[in-house]
Amino acid sequence: MARPRQPGWWYPWIFVGGMLVVIAVNGVLATLAVATWPGLATDEYYRKGLEYNRTLAAAREQGRRGWRMGLAFAPVEATDGRRLGDLTVTFVGKDGRPLQNLDVEAVLLRPTHEGFDVEVDLDHRGGGVYGATVSLPLPGQWDAHIHAHRGGDNFQESRRLSVP
Image 1: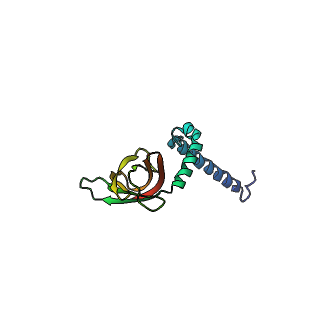
Image 2: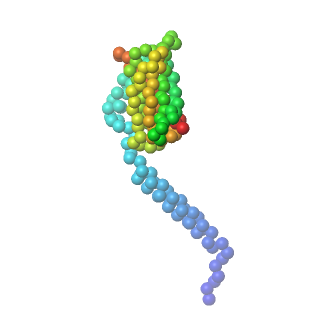
Image 3: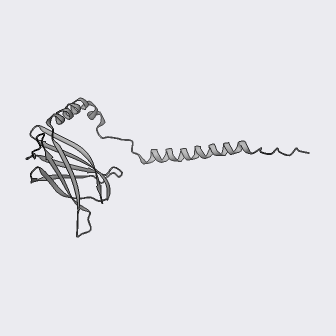
């Protein structure tokens, strides 16, 4: 006759089952991570790496120039159902005077979704104010990359926007 099992004989199997659950969840998460991310963090990574010192020098020059930027986004009522907004960028120099005659471009990127990027040239509205009406396909967070040029002077800055 077989001996009856001792009480608690199944306790080690609790740990084995728990580890199997952890391994299964990690396998699913690793598969999803690999399947949904393209793996490319930046375009033209090699060229950008070679230009690193030039980028640092340009950032120091921009700091010495002392240009300051203000950014605003205000929703605009659209009759055709599109999500419109007035993007306004204000530039002042080191002395606090408005900067005139700049070529200003804005690139609006959706940080959580690819394929919705918007590029727009901003018109000079006078008094150091540049702006344009933009159509954004989604509400929420957007990264605004502002690029301004005048002659050999360049300025670039990124800010986060919240679009209702």
